[in-house]
Image (cartoon, rainbow, N blue to C red; front, side, top):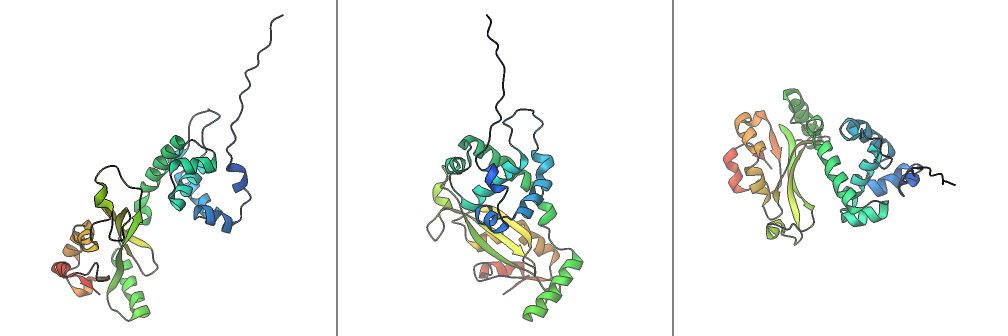
Length: 235
């Protein structure tokens, strides 16, 4: 008698999927640095870029990919640790983080924009109301983003505090929104060097030739003697 074989496909269940469905906003924020509403927003924003067109039962959903990436961003842990805690192989985590990060970067100009003339005027007014300093269009500073030690040129990424990082320069407006971001330099680079070689410094040199055109506020790490050549910064 011939045996009857049935090709039964078992749908893979991911360990983290069930528990996040009932998490409160504070619980989600503690784990992913985003509330449920924030993750919903990211899902809508990135859906077109990340959604799979496959019928495979193990294909990750857009939300699962976002949660994996946010968990990595929130903790900075190794891929195998992220994978073990969420039920994925480290290769999957590595691939997903790269894909989601690229998708997010594709929308950068929707959120990080240098203010136009009207926005600059508004910032000047609001900064003056708050601090009494005239013609301020933003505040500039550098911050060190901790990274794992790279395999190439490792010493260049060790900052003055002794850990590996990327020295990121950022400019914010009166509401704390980013208007310029530069994450091109390793941690050993000084803030003044990062600014002096940035596209923003070149832009300001051309467009902000007078005090009334607007100034940036920065600390002594940015406003060094070598930067007075550009002639448009105040501190």
